[in-house]
Image 1 (cartoon, one colour):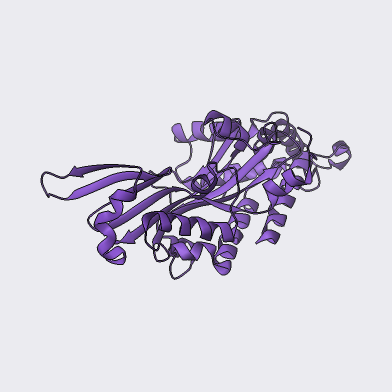
Image 2 (tube, rainbow, N blue to C red; image 1 turned 60 degrees about the vertical axis):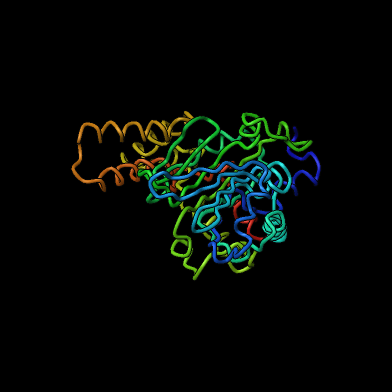
Length: 333
């Protein structure tokens, strides 16, 4: 599909960021006397009993959402756009996010405004000029998080441990939808649709520096701006791969310049350059070359600085395009 196929398609993809998967918890005392009747509103419900404690749990679903009833309260997990439209390619703005929460509450015959949000995904789809993998090739390391390139269409930044309080993901949304056999809106089947999202899980008030995060908070304008700011700042903290100047030889004055030029050429010759650097660092770690972790960080930074030395490189046009998308997306808040 050509990049300029219709103003509607462009606005559809770039008009707003959205929440996707959310995790809600509502204490039993906030549900009140209606709690025992919630199972009648679920599409499917299975009840289990702990033989040691006698505690009863009910596991069910509500139009794709996972709804579980425990002794202490109600858990709801799932994608808001999927619940509203059947696909998470369709975006939700603040207004439709509030409508989705209200619709879930209506289906369960209760108010979810005070439900505690324990996790959520927030992001945007960008309609790009080139293949998604070409943009991912140019994204390097991120401070404090590990870079994982699982395949050509997917890039993650996350913690090493099992618990993942903060994850950033960049991937080809069309390819992802095709794998999951999801509906793709007309005009987007062959689009270069780059999905960028932040996933927060647990201790949200601490992570976002706010007093509390409730279901009603998600559509609050001030809170939306806080999440948007973190979404943008995190992207701009990623090191980017620039390209060498065409007349780079005229810029070389010293042996150090020549070395940086050589490193830059190697890094720009293949889309797997970041993976090669990561593999090399892993080899060093496996061999126990350096005793302290900071040495590996400094080495990676040194390689990236050499590849992007200011007087030898210019901003890559694909990175400039992606930078502009991230700057502009905040204007739609």
